[in-house]
Length: 184
Image 1 (cartoon, one colour):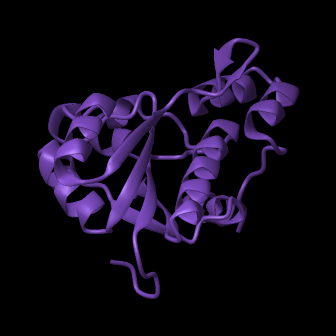
Image 2 (cartoon, rainbow, N blue to C red):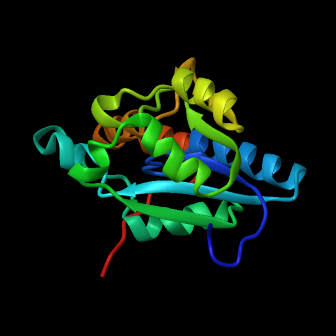
């Protein structure tokens, strides 16, 4: 349970790098669900990004710092954001154990994840497994389809590619705002 939040929660789980329009669509669903049953709209994100722990040589540069990600998530109307430290212990946790600790531990009535979300040891957890566990453990799982632009999914990868190509109008469309950099 989160201090100060009472009752059930609607929970989004993901990395949410860039907090692009697809992420905000998922957050809108979380906020709407939470309001429908008088609960809290909560998101869980990971730091560092799992790829930086599991395959550092393949890790792409992040679109947003953790602080900026949290600012953007707060602007999306969430009541709380949980930052889960991602390390080898978290990565080796069985999918069911992750669900029992996180979803049940937060009192989630509904859980929302992106279409390509995986969790647990060796990425064994899928949207289908989450749905099955929800039926068994008493919550509803929603795998949210991607939001598209020009028939392509909005994604952090696509946004990175637009920025690398210098296509700032496309990056802006995908993000729903101008791209910005954190400074000291």
